[in-house]
Length: 244
Image (tube, rainbow, N blue to C red; front, side, top):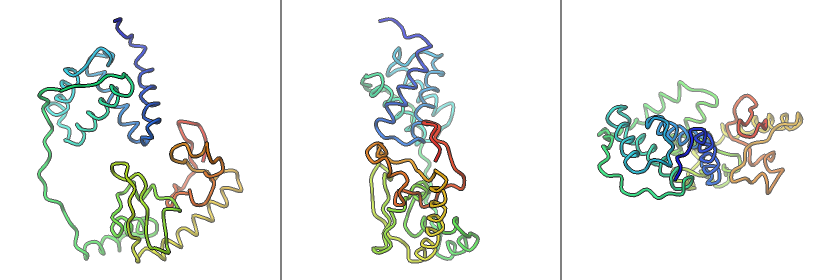
């Protein structure tokens, strides 16, 4: 079998990105997996991954633990990225990796804030930041889960919040804290006003999951799909060049 040329490596990363998008991985995961593939290739002197297999993966993971002192979760992410690369891009199965030096998991007791401490923190916040903190604490949301909430995920009647694609790509329903109801309603009134102004100027569209914009071309501009916490400035999708 002829050896792949170094010029094929950028094409490989493009194929990796395409595979990740076809499996609906998030942009953050895409960036991380591409970064790990790049680091893996550089660690082995720019050899193409098709030339390597279990021993090289073992050496790279051991290097991360011994020389780079990464955490266990970081080492696991690197392993997941390489397994995805080999399975979904190179169409190769990876067997036993041998004796990989595993990064140690820190033995720390969880730090739990008391109610008085939570109240003290909330008193030092205001506006959107305070509202988000109330949702994080009262609904048990992770930060990105809160930032990715869409208007239709909030049900004021049943006092629930639906979290889409949470940890493990699972949906779940959480309670809407009573302390957040009025502030959240006022916040959404303001967001809706901004959205209507954006629509008048030809904007007001958001990214939709699972290519729904192809099936429902107008859905991206509908109120229910808008972000609960949109960013303050209009953005341009670096992957498509579309401004929203």
